[in-house]
Image (cartoon, rainbow, N blue to C red):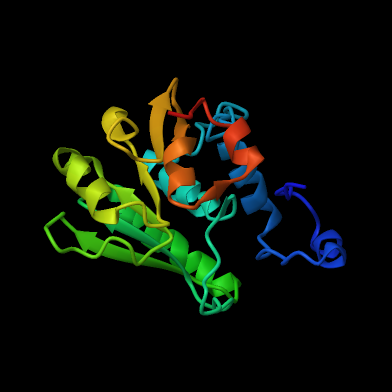
Length: 211
């Protein structure tokens, strides 16, 4: 049975499944709101302007949330459960700073930390596979074919935020639609790399491709 993102730790402990990192209620609500594609901020109250949330921050939270809805292949050497989850960023994007700020907050409150790796602009020989998620910035749109080829179906969730990303062989692309960040998935590419995407992630995607 697929694990619900809202299963309680006690229920998961009884089932023998690993208990995920506990997050404050406000963060769980934010993550759920983002996955459902609802507006990123509430309507004005008593004439006050709504708090602005930058799209880079939203994308950073999406990337963090993806870590909870993807299963990577088991490490044959035995994975260190205390090791940090790693998100790599190739190229120049404000998402990098947003991720670093988010990682600092998460690391303060959780035993298992989130590590952000800034890989810089794409260049031949760059190690792109030493992370769980690789975010490909829009600045690297001209190198999409090389980046996908370099990974060569390694178990890394590739995420971008441009229209051509899925067609180039990426797995998830986050796009702005009606002032919301929504995402599209290429499940076939993810499966070929040995990644299993949860049903919750697939159901809340705008589009799931299997070719």
